[in-house]
Length: 461
Image (spheres, rainbow, N blue to C red):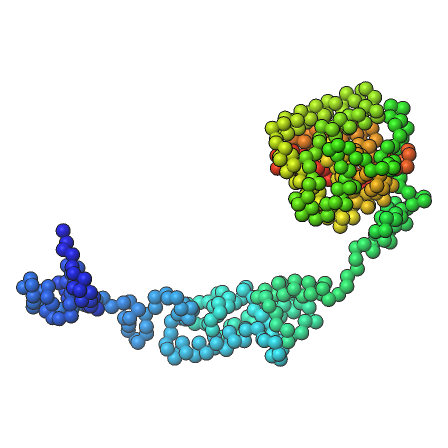
């Protein structure tokens, strides 16, 4: 076992630059005295001499006074220089310095004309004074070759049709002339005023039908009396129930456990109104479904009711079982999440130009835009002051189609977005409007459909 040295002895033993031959071969700690202590201790004082090290290859010299090829180092100048005398190296470095200085872009205020930035196809500028030619031989490189390449590149750029309107006093910031050309084109787009694509549509208004909704609630269309195309077709199987959605009640509907969306919208204006007040309570979804079934029984016949009941049977039991295990605080939390999401959606649809309406999973309308009210003729007072279902705004075929689509989306894709078409019942009796619509389902934290955002665009003949 090796004996441990005292700290003062260990600190006194300093490594030396060159050991003797014996200590070097035995890998021992040598000292600067000759003979050293190890050789004296072993009785080999005579051969105690400094070991001779092999000279480095880059230190040796060959015949004719020419230096051998140097070992590659981190210096870029050493990699780019060729074999030659020291005088030739100095002159070549001066040529390269002049040529590389010529390739540096001019600064603002330098009145230099005829400047063209070389590209990587001819010259790779590594940031040093010595540029490396892409086709450099192993003997020498002349600065005339680089100057010739720069002149040839300038002629090529002129032949490619670069914009001559760019001032030569302005530096070009890219190494590629293609990038510079693209930059010039983008600058032209910003400085000029190109014609708007909407001008072509405005010129075509007299040739095709259109509907234009104004910000003040007005509507201008190409149809007589600024109306919309009527898609009404008489069908004896259709229900003859009058349009109840267009009626404005004398008093705002108030029931136990139900507050109309119109009142909630006047109370809830900021998120703090949701969490710091007792207005938001757990929503009574069973009462909402009972009201929906009552309305469906009054409107549709037996065959239609059976078809709708089959669709509701696919998702209604799942809703019941999913909410059965929730506590009262969970239901309050889901309703607060609903009101918070509705507040954000209302801010979003207020800046959207498309007619949009939002309803619960029960079909109860909770928000709509002014564009939708203008397009269909309903008022927000008539739709939000009482319990109004989205199916009241659809014809019979669209209502049955809606229940079929919702039964497939309720527990299908978690980020369900459905594109379809439907026929809306307008506020005027026997006036229908065919629309293309997109339905987007927003779910709560329990993956239960919370609200549906519907966007409608009229289909014109």
